[in-house]
Amino acid sequence: MTSYQLIRVKSDQFWQPAFAQLSEHDLPPGVRTWGTFYGLFGLSRRELLLAVHLDEGATTADWLASAGLQVTDSRDLEPTARPLEFEPLSRPGLYVWRFFDIAASDVEEFVTLSTTAWRSFETDAEFASHPYGLFRSPEQAGSVSMTLVTWYDSLASWERSRSPGDEARENFRRRGVLTQESIAFATRLTGDGRTNAANAG
Image 1 (cartoon, rainbow, N blue to C red):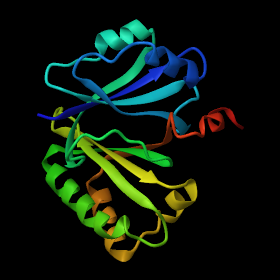
Image 2: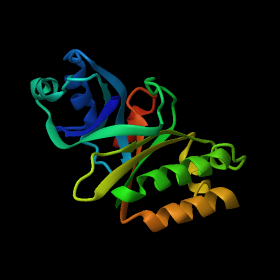
Image 3: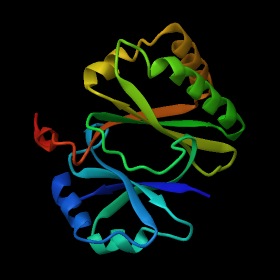
Image 4: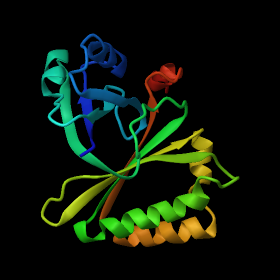
């Protein structure tokens, strides 16, 4: 089974030294980086999100321990509609991570509503967007956490996408009915050339 892992790490300083610490240690066998992200909102400037692809039996525990970083959250992710194949993320822009807690019995409907909405959402002329991943967590006590990763070319596009066309809006509304809790982070890839913005303001 294809699996991914999302890891939230924190350092004593800005995220750049944390990224440097990770870069000094080779990835373990069977682990490939999908993307490494710093926060625009939702994460502190000391934090990074690491998204990795894991072959069967691979683990990140020793790698993270050797880098000396504090792991504040780690979750296993199983891809649903996307991604169908592993390909590292490289597109400059904004990556919004949204986490939805839903009933395990609603996962199939949640995925269908999302993929149906994407047909018009990612081709909307008012903004530039592309959903790169929709993952589910293992079931716990009848609940599942869904993780959605959507790229936008800018914050302005993300803001305009809050008012999509009728078809997408209705599907997202119905998806919201299934959602028990939701939270979002806005991030950029560590290598997208805009790292100085992390320390501004």
